[in-house]
Length: 316
Ligand SMILES: NC(=O)c1ccc[n+]([C@@H]2O[C@H](COP(=O)([O-])OP(=O)(O)OC[C@H]3O[C@@H](n4cnc5c(N)ncnc54)[C@H](O)[C@@H]3O)[C@@H](O)[C@H]2O)c1
Image (cartoon, rainbow, N blue to C red):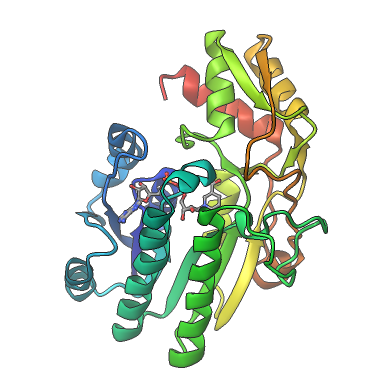
């Protein structure tokens, strides 16, 4: 079986990718620096079941450490790379843009260079719907111009995509950039609305709603994202940028309503003005994903949030 290198392995999406790969009997090398953007103990819990698997190796390393990363490439000779390590979070990027460019751009460059040097057969980059910024044309298509980015996070992802394209053009490295749309589910990031809202409603605490509740997000279940990532392995794609989203935007009001129904509790809503960097809608055009990957998201927000709430109720 091939060895797959997964960066950001202890994170929300990365840990699910590792579990799914191990389930399919791949050998997996997971890289994560367990930084404290959110509680590192959460990351330890995310990766706990993978760590018990004999086909899994965990490397506590910073993707920007060139010599440390080269050692991992040399030692484990991965065939493919799933690059998910990043400073994520739009709002935090406004406070510390330097850090976001350092990890998300320079870190990606380091991995691309090593992937070229060690003849990686497929490099998958975890990009983001944030690159569309204030795009008003819906649904968002991969061919839309990226002129309206609203945060350093979005800019760092757009720059990293550009690097991916250059590495493909210069060195023929096969690269697929996947633009994820608002991913949620068990192990969800604690800074994101699905987690914060569900937790607060369950605990009878107030939630902060920015704006009037009409803004829409294309909430996408983590299992569907993992399926989309793994489906790239079955194809031979030299270069592509592909949206992965549910393609069913839900308003904030309806999203809160769905959680209230599942939890059987009313939300205490504290209304606040919209935040800088917020966009009115995200909406994925997934026709390219359907065509190239056979991507077909299966989880409705109601079903997906039911699983998320159950995970929270079981002590996360
Ligand atoms: N969750 C979403 O809705 C979403 C949407 C679009 C794109 N993405 C992208 O998907 C990827 C995974 O996101 P997530 O939500 O799982 O976030 P996450 O923060 O849970 O996971 C990222 C992981 O990367 C690790 N990491 C960060 N910097 C590192 C470094 N320098 N070296 C090694 N490891 C490092 C972190 O410790 C963390 O475990 C990210 O690239 C993110 O930008 C996520």
